[in-house]
Length: 358
Image (cartoon, rainbow, N blue to C red; front, side, top):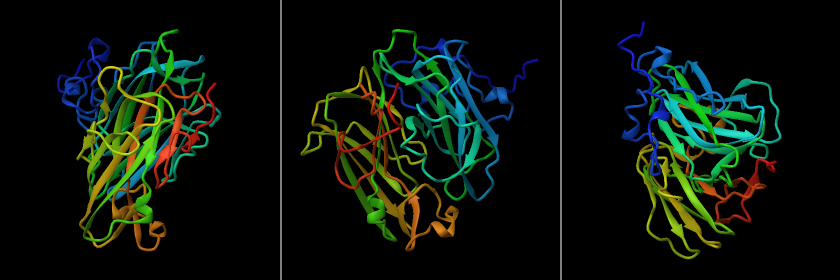
């Protein structure tokens, strides 16, 4: 018998969800019960796509001990015997998640396992194809655009949960991901990812009891369209802004976040923002450090969580200035652009990661 006290998911396919979706916004509230609500699994799980229309990936539930941060890489295979293009990504996570990043590889073949680590994913082997910091996300890619996967693609689902000073995990860590497949012939262009890190935080850490700002530019060598983006920093971050960049000056901002815990994942209206060759974006992040610690670039969220051997020259690696930006058409041989230089970067100088696509 159905428990009347447990809210259950409404199949999302029954709803028309268009462009302009922002992850975690109120339009999703009727479809996603708040993660961390009743512990009955049915109250949390996404409805999986029908057979043949997509796949569902589930991680957890797992404990996040009090006073700790837990980052885990879940190695899984895409459950498809044929190459596919993904046209829609849905994510639901329990409270306490700092981020969930999704990676794919065209070359790796790793047995299913769970790896606890704060080390970066091997970007010479894996492409970042989606990232989310909100409890819920539902992203429909523009018409004719998809993310390509070979049969049985190697995946990494990277989950970072926090149960320490600035974030709490009230129950357990857990996430569901739905990847919806495009029909044959429906996709003519591939989605690409720009993953930009402003590592100036390392060269010039945030001083105790002070403010700081860091900015970085990126330009494309060809015409592209920006489809979606999200900014990422930690608790000392106060404002993250992205502007169009013509090579010499910025235009009006098209993304702004003042929420470090759940920054908006913004899907741009229509087919996105057009960027001409030689032009690009500028992004900046502003910080306030209310402590007596030097704050630098690094994966942890709370100072108390950092292992002592990771504190170098008195700098705590607990802040980020990261931009996740999704654009098309991607160069099939350069689907992920990884930019972690302190200077301005172009598509030609950004590192191509993840290897060539089939």
